[in-house]
Length: 147
Image (cartoon, rainbow, N blue to C red; front, side):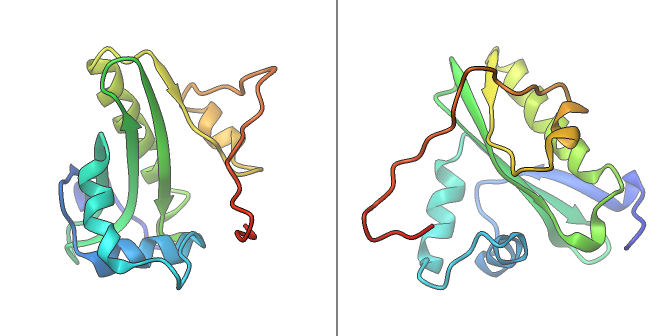
């Protein structure tokens, strides 16, 4: 684990970022498939309501990311929140999550949701998110898609 102080990291909202760094983050999270196209990364970043990277000021590289999908008025969904494993357990992820939540609230977006991986609930609870009782996350499943 690398110990980082607040002065060693920067959270930046971006409209573009090097493809290789974003793909590296997705791979580290286990969310990248070799069938995905590198050419979609910049479109994904630009199409997000907000796309944030956490930068290690010493290396100038992204060590984490998160994004918000929203119409900018009513609802927002936090997605793809991740920190490289060696940077975890230092409140960096929580700072990113709080930054994304604060950005939405400043825009007067009051319904903010996400789908968390099992076992990560305490992390999200610590930032004020709660499970939605009587709701079931759903996803359209293509017939040939085996995720």
